[in-house]
Length: 148
Image (cartoon, rainbow, N blue to C red):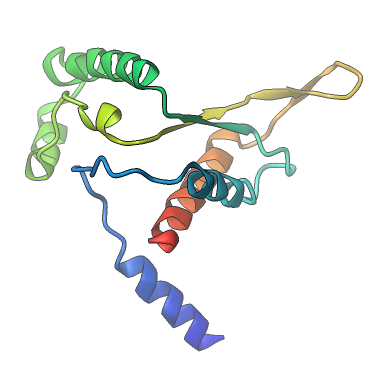
């Protein structure tokens, strides 16, 4: 048990966030497997209040990039980001440009579902939606890292 814990820690300690992505093909089935793995995440009342959407269409990725850059430009230039936050981001080198959204072979979007629908058609409230989606997102990233 200790060895497995140590091995897992070592693997996760090697994980790094990257801002530059290769445009090399990534097999769709591997990304789908990571989504299935993420969907095993614990969630409030086990409602699994999320939908993962896998996007590879270049035009859709272009439109996502345009929308993201519009919002991010407002963040950076429109005052949503205060000076302290801006200083924290400076060493990372991020700005409002999001070229990676078109370069990456796939864009995976995680949508939260605040409510679901019961078999009888009535509305069902989901619990701890943001927390549940955060856990699922973390497992998704971990699954991708584990794949190499």
